[in-house]
Length: 128
Image 1 (cartoon, rainbow, N blue to C red):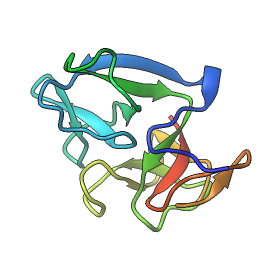
Image 2: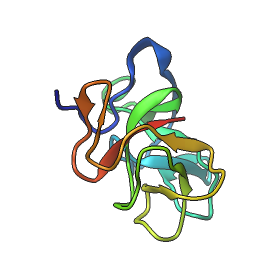
Image 3: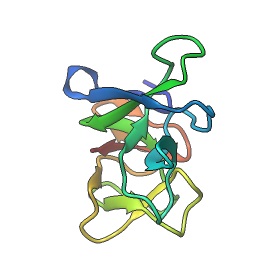
């Protein structure tokens, strides 16, 4: 069964709303906070979470962000199940990459399957 970027793992995923007035994020982006807004993360921010699908309300400027539990996130292509992940300089902004002791954990390979659900190309199931 296929999944979508930013999809959560059901009741075990915790999601909050955070300001994204510039609408700069997309579902599945690994995000940090820059200037008080959610932005696609790089190695200069701390990982906040993964941008979820949808908006709290249409044109509200509030983005739902997964901050705990399993979800589908953008990853740098060499990610494999079991890797520790964090924002970094190797991948594009908004991608998680392999790093020792990172705050996130890969549940699947890039484009891999977790609990019968396959992540799209460029994404993996991760645990925040």
